[in-house]
Image 1: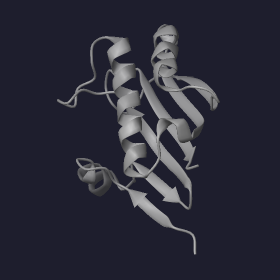
Image 2: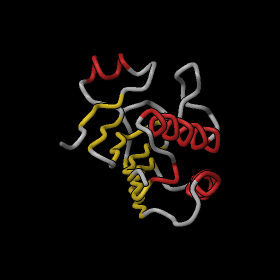
Image 3: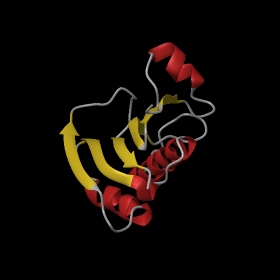
Image 4: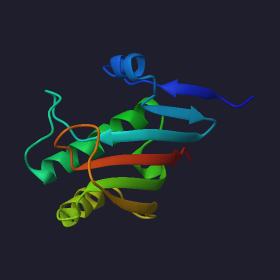
Amino acid sequence: MTIRKAIIPPGQEGTYEQFHFAPAFRVGDTVYVSGVIGHGEDGRVPSEAADEFRAAFEQLASTLEEAGATLSDIVELTTFHVGMAEIGDFIAAKDAVISEPYPAWTAIGCASLVVPRARVEIKATAVIA
């Protein structure tokens, strides 16, 4: 029987209960991560784009870890960007933590995200090797 499990990292139980979605879901060896936002320990989005992007990848890594995966297990990224002015900073943050073989990646521009002042949301699929 295939394992099917909602992944709820410590501290995100409220999100699961209030908004009725799992931060990630594991089906067998595949992990589907809901969109993550880069925020500080205070829950606020950093004023500097580079700090926000680093925080988003830290959040992604933490969620994957809770599911038994790592950033190197990612096979697909979808990113949603409020404007593309800081795409270079985003690519630098991505390249600092994601190495070859690089995952498939789609970057989508959008008007806004659910979290005020957020510039990016990262959704990922990982396959545990």
